[in-house]
Length: 232
Ligand code: DC
Image (cartoon, rainbow, N blue to C red; front, side, top):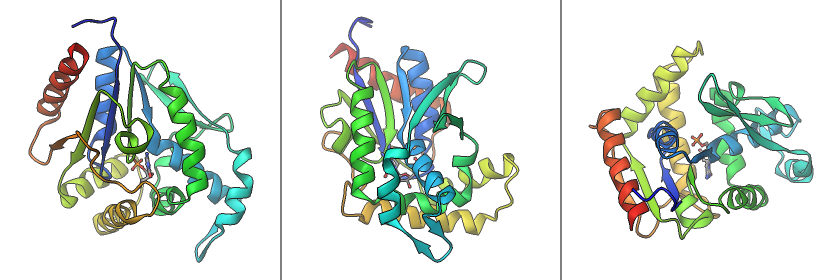
């Protein structure tokens, strides 16, 4: 493989399709930067929860938009864990953004155009030197429509809900499978139907349905596509 050529790899797809697992592995194998854009939307949702923009019955989007300049997002590489952790206003929030509470509000937060504009700007800046694997919902359609490799990941809703449920239980969260299934399917509906940058398969994206693939089979398949894209 010609190692001097660096490309952008855009990975989009539904919730809990294992995008971040494969993106992390791929970035580490290629020596690329990995960016989890879902974590960025999750940080804004956490900020909204912590700053009185959301209570159980009401979401104050105007207030959140007015506070956006106070939201500083960054990622700091943790060598022990082998990946970059999410920091909101210089505080490590990696664990807090993965809770079901944040998951319940994140798609609503992600539907606000002012928020998307801010995050897309940051994401495009991160890719200006290429050598990047980025995952999300609009990476191949909006953030990097010219990415050299675009993937669209999918799996059945029940497979995805089971994976997310197992992850949350392993982290000690008290959740039921039904709650998680409801969250996964309602986020799918919100993410695909929003007006601004809905989740759709980008032009030229290669679809990977991993319901019946092991992690290794999936990684091998995607790594081959990455090598072809670098050599193209
Ligand atoms: O990848 P994730 O499940 O952590 O993403 C959380 C939410 O953020 C998801 O429901 C939709 C939104 N999102 C988005 O709208 N655009 C992105 N590029 C990434 C995530």
